[in-house]
Image (cartoon, rainbow, N blue to C red; front, side, top):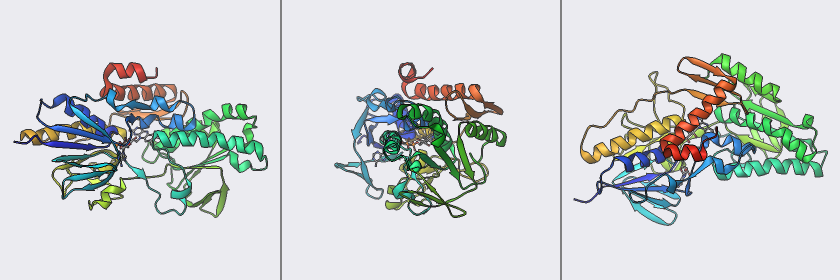
Amino acid sequence: SRIPRIVILGAGYGGIVTAIRLQKELNYNEADVTLVNKHDYHYITTHLHMPAAGTDKPENARVDILKLIDEFKVDFVKSTVTQIRPHEKKVILEDGTLSYDYLVVGLGGEPETFGIPGLKEHALNIRSINSVRFIREHIEYQFAKYKREPDRKDYLTFVIGGAGFTGIEFIGELADRIPALCKEFDVDPELVKIYNIEAAPTALPGFDPELVAYAMDVLEKKGITFKIGTAIKECTPEGVLVAGDEFIKAGTIIWTGGIRGNHMLDEAGFETMRGRIKVSEFLRSPQFDNIYIVGDCSIVMNDEGRPFPPTAQIATQQGEVCAYNLIASIRNTEPKTFKFTNKGVVASLGKRQAIGVVGSRKLKGNTAAMMKKIVDMRYLYIIGGIPLVIRKGRF
Ligand code: FAD
């Protein structure tokens, strides 16, 4: 009989781990595996806050896909997916069509702006290598512009919407970068203002309150002004209007306040919640048994019936189970139920500063920063083994 075709969309955390597991476990001619991704590199999103702020090079947050997969076992197609047609078992690419027997959707998330006017048009997002290159250049450009128009102090004002993981990690880096930028452009550091605005009643919702207080203290000492429990009502090219009708003029507005699933899922007729598919215990679409969803496009519920936050950690674990279940389908063996095991969460606050919870232990300061490095290296090990840890690991 014909060899089953597996198509994996997206080489993010979920997709690349699925591909790597499949190439390891599948026997010769057991399945045809094709991996499709927009770029020929995988990006390490958990590192993107650094190149975005300019404290590291974008190169350090990416890995060539062909260094991770074995082309004799997995076909890599560099292309952009434009449409999924689940009834026809086809995906449409910008330059072709692929048919599949089994599909894995790992296209990642998109910014959720909750309908706040102007946010989509005027705010920047930390999402990809291209977006962080743009942000880094944009920040430097604001300093250069200020030197030409010294009455425009708003060029030196930064608004970061959202005090979740991404927002907090980014402001920690940005605060670290400001002294160097001020020196380079001869700007008085007192003139630089960084606002972190969050609608929820706390920064880092869901995190241990004692650690949140520690993080805010560290960041306030670095010069961040928090506006917690304050909603952004509107965003314009000049700044943001916040609750209480205060308008903050800013040359840079970055939105990190929400993630939704890829828009193609809604377009394809999947039932979604904010663009994400609530998957079955086997990580399958409840509508189509041959479609698996991993990472930010999927929703997995915890024991209290609330969705787990979309993280690289859960996406990686899903990739492993997704590959296992694909093979089970092909071999007609029992699939595995997905169970998320929280291995700990660490948020960086800039150089040598972080907070984290690992097991029942609370970590802060340099210890937590070391843990962040260990977590990052562990991931490099999962996808690329020791050689990748040596090449990309940061000791
Ligand atoms: P992603 O990693 O989002 O990758 C999706 C892939 O699909 C990309 O390669 C993209 O190029 C590709 N793609 C998208 N659209 C198309 C298309 N149309 N055609 C072809 N290819 C396409 N999580 C943690 O656990 N810990 C952290 O410390 C942490 N820090 C973060 C910091 C930042 C700045 C950000 C942005 C996120 C962070 N996260 C963290 C969250 C984590 O990055 C995501 O949950 C994770 O990346 C989701 O993985 P994924 O498999 O859904 O796909």
